[in-house]
Length: 295
Image 1 (cartoon, one colour):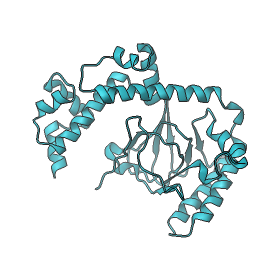
Image 2 (cartoon, rainbow, N blue to C red; image 1 turned 90 degrees about the vertical axis):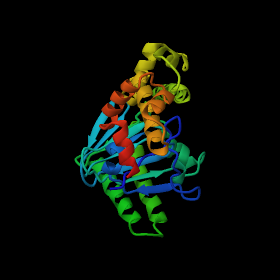
Image 3 (cartoon, rainbow, N blue to C red; image 1 turned 60 degrees about the vertical axis):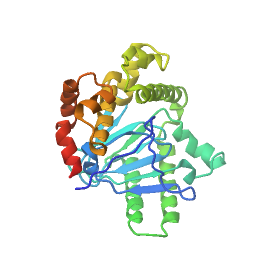
Image 4 (cartoon, rainbow, N blue to C red; image 1 turned 30 degrees about the vertical axis):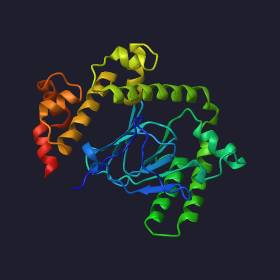
């Protein structure tokens, strides 16, 4: 079975271009189970996203929240929000990702009055449950959009029309009074998280400490722990180890370097400790991983 991996930059922003500049809309008929480690890992994008679970159960992580999105349910993920999807078995969850400007040009009356207020909400996501009337209406329209994408070309006009119907419902149902202060704090916290991640990506080969990671964002060690835990649910040091392991994994199947050499290059002082951590994370030894990838 082919496996897929989501690609992000050093801030965890997804690097794939969703659609084109003339039509910034993309449809992804994803089975989460087919991704590496059965998850679409932490990422964010400026675009808006809607997901609809057709089969199975998607586990969505946003900050410290972890939601189960069951068959027939869906969710809306707002612009700029770090999120991750996981599955414990085959989970077909098609999703659409599109730029807000697909609905109206930036700075236009429609954009400023109806689009921007929802983007600026402090609420990072909205679950969509068929048992709630307005949410079921969104799901029904979303289902039509997904069906349209399977029919081939010349569906753009109908797609945009249906998206505007969804947006009309969202703009009426979501609490637009919850804008600004919280949203700003969320963005500020995310910026600090990304600053510390960037520091780890730049210095992972060195002997770096929690204090050094926190200092890169001008905050305390406890502040760094809180931001990592609320943002991606692990500590800074655990993230550092995971990042080192990911770099080692790439070297294992792209080079012929020895295990001990790779361990040292990615920042582990002991090859024995590296092998234990690698097995814990990948459920196989470095040698087994190398052999599996070379087949």
